[in-house]
Length: 91
Image 1 (cartoon, one colour):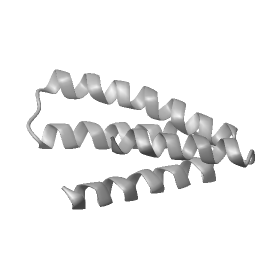
Image 2 (cartoon, helix red, strand yellow; image 1 turned 120 degrees about the horizontal axis):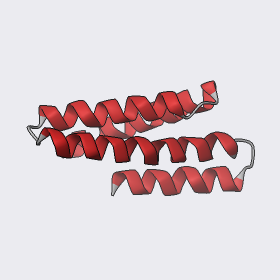
Image 3 (cartoon, helix red, strand yellow; image 1 turned 135 degrees about the vertical axis):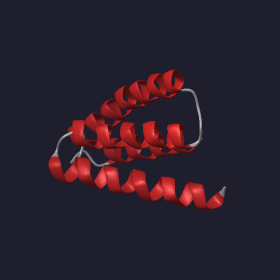
Image 4 (cartoon, helix red, strand yellow; image 1 turned 180 degrees about the vertical axis):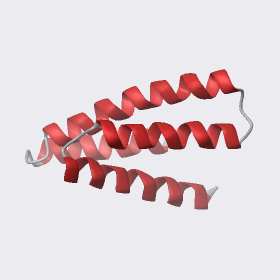
């Protein structure tokens, strides 16, 4: 279980870095949704539930990465969004 959290943290941090470098929320949100989709299928979950959760994950990730790119130079607000998003992802 602990190794799963480490891998998840590395993926989220890498996607945040990609979003900030590209100033675009769509590419990291798509990568996140693809990871959700293929990991769900790999774990043997039903296709329809994996598809629905991936679409919802894509929408939420796009909003999160958009907020991060919008408030990138804002200091406290940026860090607040970053921390709240990471807490939500891990729990």
